[in-house]
Image (cartoon, rainbow, N blue to C red; front, side):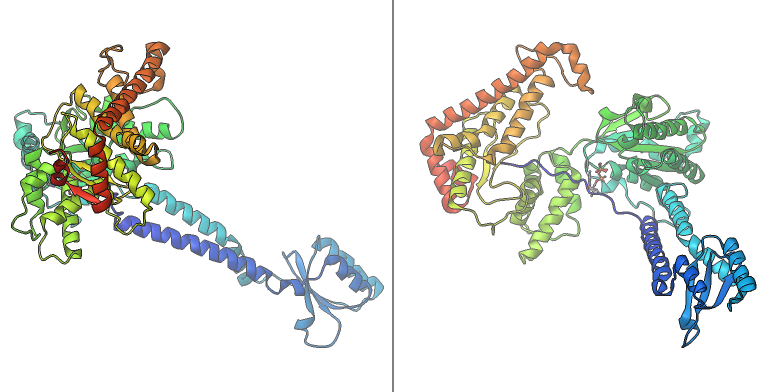
Length: 610
Ligand code: ATP
């Protein structure tokens, strides 16, 4: 039930300018709603009792009930005063007249020929009233236009074109130096010449040297790509303009391309400087011939290619871009003169992790027995960002537990919190569920003990953490570059150990194995389609960009893959059941110990095998 490690993929906060634009837009929308409401209600309020239908007016004229009729030129309604007692204003009514011209002729005739006693008043239009009326009626339209302009601006017509560090506008420099990056020594060595070029471009240009225009940094999220790009700017003392690929992609066609243009124009004015485009895959993914949003993407990417080609050799602007999905990128981006240099930023090795931990331990208080080498050993596969997160979490846990210094226990708990989630000690669990979890976890632990390639158990627990009901943690003792077929097969057996224990000990299976089954099926699929490890299929790769391409292999091969995945999983499940059936006594003991103590350490676990 072990969960995959979480990736530190936080979104960067919006900058102030963008927040201000959002606030303005919301304000404007509210104004629009308010003004429409005011207009609607003011034209409605009290008007009903003051209105008189036209047909009724005709009847009242014929019955001599009207004292006065006032007409304002240009208006389609008239004000009539009824005969009677009381204030004149209270006897006034407004009447909407279908044709003023015809009505005027008719009423004039009534007065002249029939001698009706009606006072007829014709007023010229009140210019002030006329203007305010026009403005009022146009207000919603004006506000709507203003809103559109605002949205357009926000989308990039006049909007942001990259966040600047260390520019002449007084913005703060990145402040990052190579010393702030632990490990990555070879990568730093490779990039040092870029720093030198940015510092004294003329020396290189006079020598006729051509400096790479674009450098692509590949690596998992959190491996330090942004950090290294900032450090180049920091070391060279040049401005750093940063923008994320997703910021180019907009609702309105053509704006992505316009933002690219603006970004490069800005950079040229600030040269020597660095442009950093994070998540370049958002704009740099392979161009397609499709329509809609993809055409917009294509336009943005084309503009980027145009800008990169259009640099003058004397323009000392270096474009750094980062991605964790290099396979997605359009090949045109990697051609000479564009991102022709690619640097892989790997997850740190044992020594790298130790150094990153030491670097991030500055300004934190640790107990004297805290050993960064041993923490590094327990965190194989962690990225720099995750390690920084471990230390931050451990400081938070230490404060919460009122420790005067960060202890080994705080750090261990932080690692668990990051890998499997927060321990949920307060959750009420039924005895039946507890028993099921105890056998499930004991199953993983006992099975893996009999699999030579699997690492030793570090801790088994039935206290829920994150989404998992319990977990079995394994020791990580070395950084591996390659994984053997035997190891993958045995990993699948260990994963199936949970379900096998439920079946054998309780004659029941549960949903608790869903994650194990997902991971095991993924391994089986990769073994067949990526690593070419199946004897009958042979070493072929079925990894394709478009499922359509699979057709070239023919249905027989595709069916065979499906069958073999099933065979691999079945075998793993059977092996796990066999191991447990032969060691039922140990399985029972471990499950009972878990039910009693909820958590057992590696030493306690090993005792059962003596
Ligand atoms: P993303 O792909 O998510 O943008 P990234 O590879 O650009 O990630 P950064 O943003 O550079 O990663 O790293 C995040 C944080 O992790 C850094 O601010 C730093 O605190 C820490 N970090 C990563 N690698 C290292 C390292 N080698 N040395 C020191 N700190 C590191």
